[in-house]
Length: 365
Ligand SMILES: *Cc1c(COP(=O)(O)O)cnc(C)c1O
Image 1 (cartoon, rainbow, N blue to C red):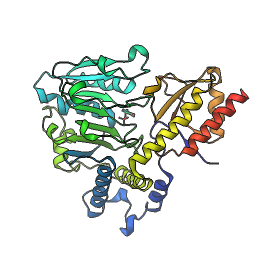
Image 2: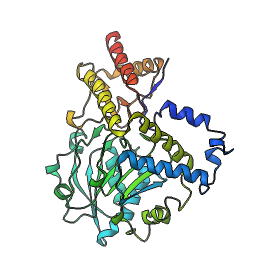
Image 3: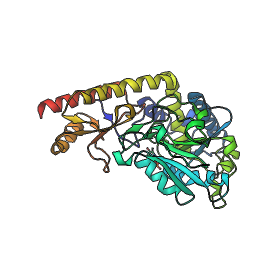
Image 4: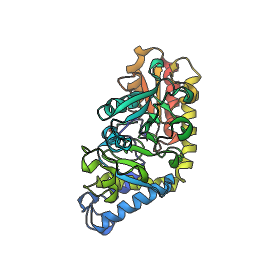
């Protein structure tokens, strides 16, 4: 029986990648060493790092004036590292603007308040985060150090299907985006952003690696209290080698990037992700047995929360799913219900199997 893993993160990886990692586990390319055992400054690991950086830049067409940094700490650490690196741009005390669209942007806001003034320029909390606040409702501060958004809310299931415009929507302040859970799932114009960041464990690779893309002109403004290992300029000047980077996670991410290139790149993944999401949402929309709560133009292609109309059936639904090899469908505890995360590595066959089970369960209930 095939297994399909719908975890929100750490999440499914392409089977080919896991097989290759297994084959190379004890002896990477005749070096006699596992990647985990290599010096991060040795020529073997340096070649892995360079290929991984090059492939990521190619996949997302990252412009030359952006640094690509590999850090540790995850997106939650970046919630502090971002104001520590950007709030100093305008002299203190600075104000940063945030758009609150769900659990993750709420956390970003809470953390940023420890380092600067925060203006929540728009929030969809009053509608239980069922949509992205319309751009013309954003109330920006006069001169924000930056404007922060979370472009895919992993827990709530909303996704930006537009890119805010720096002149019209952010008062010319740099746009900073948490893309943890949909990076590389769709084509992105990196040049519209000042900073893009994300943890790797949703749509890229294992936990432990954090990616930050930052435009050159935003470097060099870290607050005095910023740890050196989190000062983006220091990390960039040392090509992500100021401290020991998460070497094995970088290696696996590199294998995922090679896999993505073999699939046809990000545009092809976007095409598949649109088809996968449509298959699932179309079925959920076709019946009253299941419900979704997100406005149709703001639905995430990656994370699909849904609810049984009769919540007393939740346990039976989950145990039946597990018997059929459909794993980790339980919703986040703050939202309840179910959640299917259908990242790049989830094949359409997994979504087909889920929809078949949704039908089967409905008809047997
Ligand atoms: C998972 C997630 C985070 C938190 O990532 P950590 O690695 O636990 O720090 C932050 N933002 C988004 C959008 C996420 O999906």
